[in-house]
Image 1 (cartoon, rainbow, N blue to C red):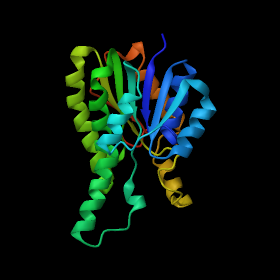
Image 2: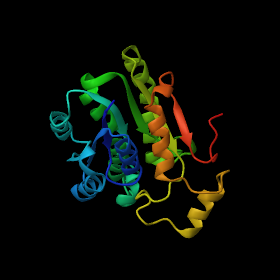
Image 3: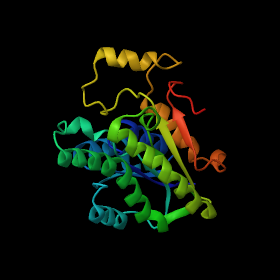
Length: 241
């Protein structure tokens, strides 16, 4: 059965891999993001099954407009939008700029998921799936970014309880270091990369496809009794117990 899948942040990195995985199933995939060029490039690469819609998920008006472009029923929602916005902003030198930096991370990682999920809630199909992309930073710490991802996991607990009576599952996939993404904005040194890989038990960096495969499983019939959970994809760098 063909499903409709909404992937925020679907133009690059993990979001692109998630879109490709569902498109390979023959599902209809809608990808969103702030930048038109990577979104359209991804849509062009994967053909007519992938539709690109420019949408800044921090803007309620744009999220409202997004909903008007979606089908009446959405089966899977995957929130890949976000990232550490501290890489894009100067270090704060006063309380006002500190507050702005923290709000930027909360907006990008938490508010985008909350607004979009709320906006499409009435369209989510019974037996559907919501997956939020979290981060190992929620456990290991990383300033405002880690706090924002921890907030996503806390919110997901309520989301699973809210959606459970409709047989909709809600989970968080929490990656460790994932190569081939824009996360570090090309600022990752070789030394830091080697340290991140050395921290794993598997001895390798994660890939977007590793995360996409876990998301795909959580949206499958085999995962209908898994909800309210944080699933780590980090090569053993951080244990869940």
